[in-house]
Structures are given as structure tokens and as C-alpha cells.
Image (cartoon, rainbow, N blue to C red):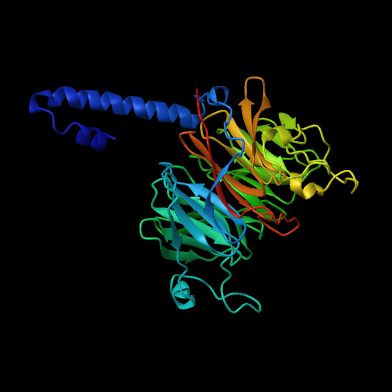
Length: 422
């Protein structure tokens, strides 16, 4: 911070140097105090009440196209670069302003083995390139990817070259997250474990066990704590240093996704279409939004645009009569959820034709719907800009982890929605 301030004021006279040094130091102190308060969750940016209704009736604008379903999107800390991956193994880096894309080239099998990759198991002759998860380090140097080949792959963002493959997981890697401000990486897998790595030293640190089934999603803030969701109908908060865990059990439903609001509060989405608000002090949800992504009646076409065609959360999910609805409940699963870091604004996505924006009111301990933004397809991944100026969604014709639903008219790609604040 001092270096940046020094560069900005290099052209000034030498007489003012002492005063400038003091001013710089006080500025650095203020910035560090503000950051510390925001990270600890004591200060929350008020964004939701200032958010203006999205003007475009068409909703999201597709910025990057993929040939297959997009499974993950990620943004750099400076909000300038974006990253997306799809089921066919394509990893793209794109510029948020211009939309210009650059592709990451997978190295040959021999180079992968020299970078630490183990031989594929079973009948497979080559490593599967299908990618399920992406994560970007806070310093913008490293991109991590994980997928069906059971390895965590490390890439250099500046050169787009493959650096190393980390073996250790016995089954596909389903989720990744860097610890904020560090190069520490957490990876979750279908083998029911979470592994802890340091990308700077290219080192394995620890294995965290606790789930009784596949780990689907994980999230991490600055503290050495990791929030995970598994197919065992549990959400767990692992305290890595203490080697302890907190287990959160929702009402009888299977959780699909989770994310931190701050160190003490978090959100989750489930396959019955509900969204839960949690507090670290309670084992049950503080607040539940049922039917957050309600199904469309058979009379309405899911391809219709405009948020006025999206019904309110008044329809029940579950088993429906064929004549009443044109989809099974697969399309109302909350497949992705994201929070604008350090604020009260959240977004959730499913396969019902819209992304919903939410206001998290922690004082009243509830979640209020703000706006519906139309977006056709399965919303498999969401990412807010750190500044809160836009929302990025990874969409496709199929869900992220399977093919139990299909929307052939949807477009595979990355869509962006600008967010205007008053």
C-alpha cells in the first residue's frame, strides 16, 4: 500500500516528504483497520437496499460461449479477469470489459506425468479432462482446477501454463476454494474427504475427514475454517487448527450448495428448492425460504423472457402430475448460491429460468427476495464481483454433476448481469 501511494506522489517536491510519509502511514492504518473490520464481519456493506431493479427485460447477457455445459466460474480479486470451465475440459480466461477469451491448453500425457499426475484407473487410457471446479488465488497468480481425473491441477494465470498436478484424492474432485489472502487451497472430493494444500510450496498439508458421503461444495474465508456440504444431508464447519468440526443438519432434505456470509453466518441451497440461513451458534436453520425457485406451470413456456413470467415462490416442489407441470423437480433444485463478500446481497440459481437476488437481513434473521433476472438453462455456478457491480453466472443444458435433466434450448456459456447501485 505504501509503494502504491509512493508511486502516485513521486512527482512532488522533496520538502513535503516528511508530511507525505505521515499521511501515507495514517492512510495505510485506516485501510488496514477497515479491511480487518470487514473481514471479521463487524462491518457489513449495505448493498441490497441500494440495488436498482435490472433494466433489461432480456436479463443476463451471454458473454462467453462454451460447447458443453459450464460447470464452474470464478473471478479474480480485481474483477478484471474471469475464468470458466465446462464438462468437455475447456478452461477459458476472459476479460470482463471486452469479453476477449484465451484458452488454457492441456499438456500431453507425458508432461502431465512429469508434473506429478498418476496413471488413470480402470479401463481409461488417458486422463479425463472434464472439469467440475475452479478457484483463483487472492494474489491473481494461480488458478486451480479439479475434475473427474481425481487430480487438483495448478495453472499459472500470467502464462496460462500447467504447473503441477496434485494426486491424493481417490475419486473426482468436486469443489475447490483458496483461503483468502493466502495460497492455501482446500479441495473436496467424492471420496468423502477434504484435502488441504499449499500452492506456493506445492505441498500437501492435511486430510480432513467427517462426511459419510460425497462432498459437493465447499467455501472458505480468511480464517482456517472450511464450510462443506455433502450428500449425507449434512453441512459441516471444520476448524482446521483445532481439528474440530460443527455439524449442521437441515430438515429432511439433501443440500446441494453453501457459502459464507461472514465468519458466523452462512447460506445453503437444497434439492427441494429451499434456501436456508444458518448461524454458527445454532444446529438448525435460523430461517428457511421454501420454493425459492418454483416450477413453471405447463401452460407457461420456460423460454419466455421477462421476470413477470416467473411465478412467485408459491408452488410446491416434489412429485407433480404430468398434466399440471412440464418438468420434474430437478429443475427447481438450488444448484448454486453466492454472496457478495462483506455485504447483505445474495443470489441463487436453479434450472427454472431465472436467477433470484436476495437481501439478507441479519437483524431480523430472514431473507427477502429482491428481483428475478431471467436466465435460461441450469445455473451451475455464480460469482459476484468484489465491488458488487456485476454478477456472473455459468449456465448449461445439464446440471453440473450429472445428466438427470436437460434443457436443449439453453445456451452453454457464461452470462453477465450488471448491478447498479443508487
